[in-house]
Image (cartoon, rainbow, N blue to C red; front, side, top):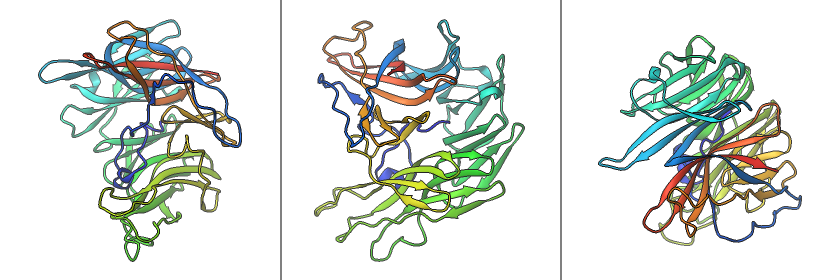
Length: 400
């Protein structure tokens, strides 16, 4: 399951349904020891180690881990010139070494922001946005060959959920959810715009986002949006009530609340995350933004207590078995509520990286290795230095 993709900004951007890397999602290299875990419950000491550092400047965008000897990543290599070009590519680890290859020809002309999705025994999906930016193209790896998938979701894919090799949900297009049954696409209309999707079975799927009408919208509070959740029972989507949000008087300008991430752990345990924000800088004293954490108990959605400050406002990227969650910003929260930051070493001072450079790690995806306690992440290290700033594409592995 891809969660996160990239990590979600818990600001007014959520209410608009946009996605992207939030400010502060990386871990700045301050040169100081990592902070003591914060929470009543202690958190483990975790760190990232470098599994692969790509030589040329660039970034990794996608990650799919089918097995310890079958790991895939997608990346882009930056080439300077007029205009600046990004060349996309595939990385594959077969258990012995990493190999790089071009994007499969079945995707057509150059695609950007390429992503991956593991279907387990059903193979692998790869997709990217066309050079013109007007369509998403899909391809499937069957273990030997890439095959083009029929045209499906329109617009940019914002999230996916794999419930089985022939049971895949994709969010793409305005207020649409698309389902792949192994042979064809079917399109369903959602009750509201959604930015995240997940589920536990073909009869238990959740799509979360925001709504701009109904209870809690407008009126004295002038809220422009409220969190929204829709449930698929195998036959249709149904809107399910969620808690409403309102700032105390005086209400700030253009306030809105939305959900931007969802993680389905069991039919009676679903977690949703988002934010309650407003248009800053319009004058007057501004209240604190609110982080939204909701839990479905099988009957209704509840507001959950806030995580410790260092984990507050961060969205989950991957589940760590029954131990906890990896969050954006290189944070980790245990099932008991302990919060810690994952540290990592500096890049070697080679390939143009200077010893004095400031470095921060930004992960696009985190994925467990099936059948083991191993966890991998893919993204880039931003290297800020005088005269030659750059980013280095990296795959990292958790060290417990």
